[in-house]
Image 1 (spheres, rainbow, N blue to C red):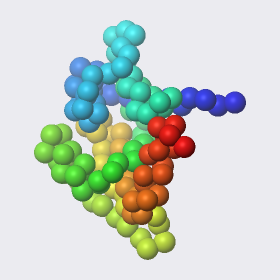
Image 2: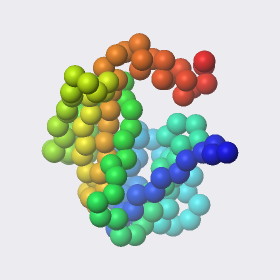
Image 3: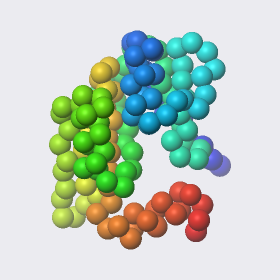
Image 4: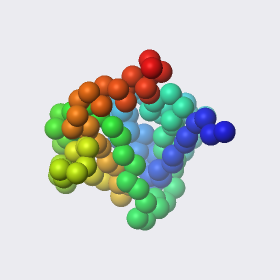
Length: 130
């Protein structure tokens, strides 16, 4: 039985990497067991590890569901100086999406449900309210 998930991205400068992800997640890491490693629990049971090392080329993107992708794009452009972030949609796809990269080349994506009822149902499910 799978009950948790951990995903890792690597950064060549841990101090700068941890600072960048602090801004992305708007908070300190949840766990820093040793130098060169930090973890954030994104949602219950889903962790992102930021580790010092060489990024893996062509990986990802790691995608996060957000309630308003336009607001998130604006925040990232302002706070993290992201410049390459286009939002896409297609009639047959239930979400709008966009992808950018961190300063180390890790691809980070975001998506927003077009149907707000579906979005709210997903949020309640993730929070264990259903």
